Amino acid sequence: MPRRKRSLVTDINIRITGRVGHITLTRPQALNALNHAMALAIEKALDAWEKDDNIAFVLIDAEGEKAFCAGGDIADFYRQGTTGNHKGARSFWRDEYRLNAKIANYSKPYVALMDRIVMGGGVGISAHGSHRIVTDRTMLAMPECAIGLLPDVGGTYLLANTPGACGEYLGLTGAHLSGADCLYAGVADYYIPSEKLNELHDALLQDGDLSVLEAFHEAPGLSRLQEQQPIINSVFSLETIPEMMAMLADIGSDFSMKALKAFKHGAPYSQMATLIAIRDARNGDLEQALRNEYRFVSISTTEGEFLEGIRAAVIDKDRNPVWKFPTLADVPKTLLAKMHQAAEDGDFKL
Image 1 (cartoon, helix red, strand yellow):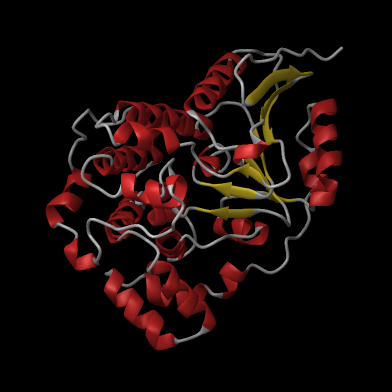
Image 2: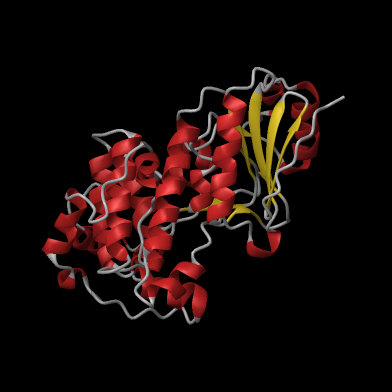
């Protein structure tokens, strides 16, 4: 009989089925947004399963018809932050980033079913895995610039390792990736039609054998990201954001104008920091990228745009943020320089 051991943490179902450590996000009403308790519960399970010889691999999936995980649950951090309390947010980010690194370095296969919406924190608990599965319904994005943050959870490292200048394009515009795009970008390994997911799911749990992934994998079809690679390289390899925006305007294609419009939705400070972080990440490892991301988010709670970005997107939902630094020229160089200085509460370390 399969062994089943369930977690008592709400919003997540953690159990052992046969030889599989099985994690299911169970907050469909909140698009399975990842909260602090969920992150800690996942880490605890991974630590236990890594030592359990009966566990062959880990499988993470989600309930609901809309999302795998649409990001981190950060609304409470806004309410705390407006009173000057940033400890909760910083504690969450430290623990979340440690989990991201643990997944990337996990000694057993980590299988992520990245069906439907995958954003922000959802990328962090899936795209660092060893066996990443996308579908025809997958929509992955790192849109943090629009909320005054930057692509974190190791996102700058993932973006830095995409083809050409795709990392800059995706990080600065928050563009959406299809399943085919995810394979091309290197953030997924298998493409499986959504109508076959239940069959695959059952096969994985029944047999505890990852070889079934190859049997289910299919060619993903056209990647629009790959199709636009020449333009992306020409524009997003430029040194500065103003140069990029000017070239997009000059090109004038549907693709370039959509990218230009996306620039206008982001916080200029976040965009400038994102460009620095992605380019730094090309010369470092995941831990270094997470350290730099933590430096930024730690600053963002007090000196940056985090609170205003969350207010506009999550609290009031007016989608009309009033940034402290409304233009690229307004962003202080001294603030950007802090990304290369230790965080005031100490650097992130594994």
